[in-house]
Length: 438
Length: 89
Image (cartoon, rainbow over all chains, first blue to last red; front, top):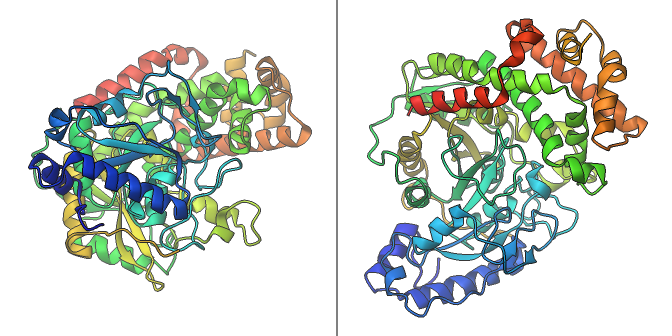
């Protein structure tokens, strides 16, 4: 990544801990790189210039010592309200840092800044009204998915090693997919969401975007040390609906899946049912979360469009959707994980879309292509399962094709171990490197 | 009919979305302090109708519930789900 900065989180932290890379140097170099690349990518809404503590010895001994991270602008940080894709955030000395950011800081990570996002985390693309739209490092003509758009751009372009995002209906996995990096949506309830702006409390999860599963693991071990980080080897099964995927990507997806397992499961009816309940909860809760902003006309278009319907929706529908959640998960577990620990499932339906195709108001805009981005996402949020978006091949233009690995609840370590194995099988060591093709 | 009866009737396709809107939906939106344009109202009705149709197609058994059976509180449902998730750890 640079003359003295290693490629992985583990390597940076080791270099700092062993004294080969002084934490002050790591901080200076990463801040310089963050600002320089951001000048091209427009991924950051805030650049953190907080000085390191006077004594850095303790910090340098931590598991993420000197590792530069930056996160979706949806979390309270010390002395700053998040901008939520509406603005650049507001300074306020009374604001206390979100516990999730606090944990990373205590583990030695450097918080380099806040990253742009779709307004109120309520869109599948990076398009915003009030802030510059981040560019896709794979090519400026390519769309960036949302809502954790800045996180995916910052990771793919090498501004940071990893970034926290949030995922309510694909908002970590979609941007990761469009930028050719990895995105982990965590198990419902695994990571504390205090001091994070909600969209749909029943579905919101915090996730991690990085260029390798190993880097995601480094962050997750700090956030969820209680998980079993010595996972057993995973038995795999796959689910595929060949007729749904574009012929431009289907052979690659099928070939990769079948190269890892011949155990095929059919979960189509479970997916469809969970997707319908998820949409219902999302519409209802967007209305409740943003009730005041909708009433005052201050909500963005996406929030208004969903939330107005949510406010009209009977509460009993929402009650029913929540009551059905446990039986839906029970039914899914019986089918998907009867003989397997990890399910290989589609994520991407077609080749990566261009800006013109999915940014509203552009000449070739296609609602179908926009909706296709989260076709395979929301149902997993309803079931509360962890899922890892993973690039596993390339299309005829050389652009990434991603699938997702779905795991059992709280089995993130197993998911990440398998994800890293597949990543190395396909991309070789050291995996995915930063790109800047703009 | 109670609001819960009307809501379930819409889910099961026993009444159309316009009837629901007149009987209940419009009032819910107004009580939230929101005034919808006609276009916004049409869009909301379409979304509700589409959702109800999707659930009739994908979860018909779940829609046979009686209003009185929906007494389990939201908190109880959430706890049951969370506990089940944890049991799968």
